Each structure stands twice: as structure tokens, then as C-alpha cells.
Amino acid sequence: MASAAIKTGVASGAAARQRHVFVVCTGEQCSEAGSRDLLSDLKHECRHADADVRVGASRCLGHCQLAPAMIEDGRMLGWVSRRRLRGELSRLGLRSLGQRRDFDRH
Ligand code: FES
Image 1 (tube, rainbow, N blue to C red):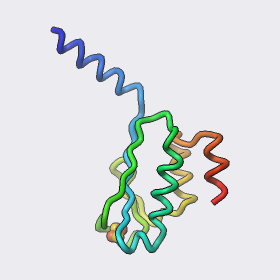
Image 2: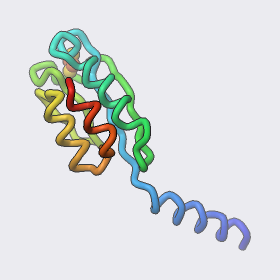
Image 3: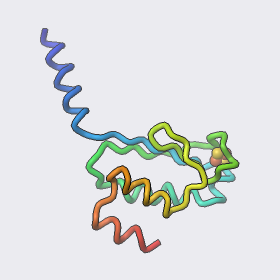
């Protein structure tokens, strides 16, 4: 009985907070196409997000023709520009007003 109550508490707490997982390819072709800038921008932009955001890097994701490539919540994105990344983060509600000004300078 006690374990059921604990499981319920964890589930409701986790449901209240959005979770997003980003994996940026840092393989050779994606790096040459600017993926390290995307990774840096993501880390900067999401550091104060009001969500559970995980940002990671991976070697070649196997879609080099889409460089720079990344995975957003299980979805493969290709030819990702910094502008497109900003759009994705806005769509997901992960950009705060203060961070927007700083980020848009690039
Ligand atoms: S180097 Fe990025 S997908 Fe292959």
C-alpha cells in the first residue's frame, strides 16, 4: 500500500514538468557544418528553462547528408541552422525573454 502511494507521487510530480531531450551530432561532417555552435547555443539557452531538459552530444548519428543533424525528443532534424534551433526552442517554450535577446545577437 505504501509503495503505491509513493509511485503515485512520483508520477504526478514528473507529469507537472515537461521533459525534452536533445542530442546533437558532433561527428566530423556535422561539426564542419556548425553542430558545435548548436550544442553551445542549446546548453546556453536551456540552462534556466522551466523544464527537465537534457542536452547531449553524440558521434555520427548516421545521417551525415543532413549535416548538421540532431535529435529532438526522438525526432531527427537535419540541416539545422542556429535560426531554426531558436525557432524549435521557441515552439517548445524553452526560451525566456532575457535569454532571447542574448541568443539573437549571434
Ligand atoms: S557526422 Fe553527423 S550524422 Fe554523421
